[in-house]
Amino acid sequence: MTKAEHSLPEIIKDVVTVIAGILFCGFALRGFLVPNKFFDGGVTGISLLIHELYHINIAFVIIAANIPFVILGAYQVNRVFALKTFVCVIALGICLLYVPYPIITSDKLLVSIFGGVFMGLGVGLSIRGGCALDGIEILALYTLKRSSFTISEIILGINIIIFLIAAFELGLPTALYSILTYYTASRTISFVIDGLEEYTAVNIISGKSEIIKEKLVMELGRGITVYKGERGFLKESFDVSQPVDIIFTVITRLEVRRLKNLVHNIDPKAFVFTNSIKEAAGGVLKKRVREH
Image (tube, rainbow, N blue to C red):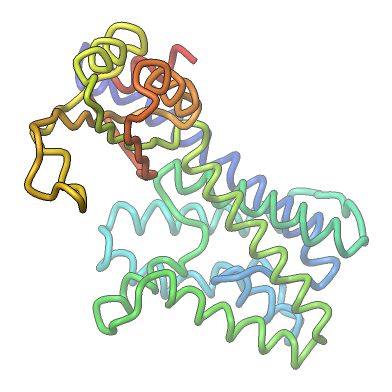
């Protein structure tokens, strides 16, 4: 199989994913947020605010608002990413102009929740496809290099400004509902990007490490890494310690409970600690994920 033949299915998958993301974003805007004068965070929130204050068509506002961030993305990420993002933003504008989305509801709670869900679904799918429908992360990356704030703090600060302006111009209830929309969207984005394949790193310290290693490999089909360490160092016997194998493995979150039960059945006193990781690839990981 050639490299081109191998990459073609991935390209098609990315294109379909991005198109779905664009359609979901358009649905969130036309079906929920715009008719009810609700907002989101980021560049989309800025675009919605400008639309409400100056009554400019939301399609043109979103395109114009994202152009500076597309240019910034060419320098902060790469030109291919910036070009793909620009094409996606243009496609979203066309979608907002010509796709006849129905207005779903005027119930404020439903609008804030489901508008956020569909917006998060759209933005998350676009990110999985390799582009961005909201340039706020690019701005955060740019600001990060010139300040001591984290990306999360920068995005939070920008969104606070957006929601404060919304509260003064359109009323506090609208701003509060819009914060709920933003929260729902951000949680949906995280789920779409990480999904059920969000990975968990597991460290196991046990005196029965040989049995646990065998079970992890033979029963769970996990790849493992073993660190050499020492255990003991208790307050009443600080000078007493013994060597121990520290087992490290990466699993999906669907497997966490099964792994903990397996370890507990072998050694109830085993010390197990976990932490989430955003992305993992290689080894036997992907093969095992597809079997679930």
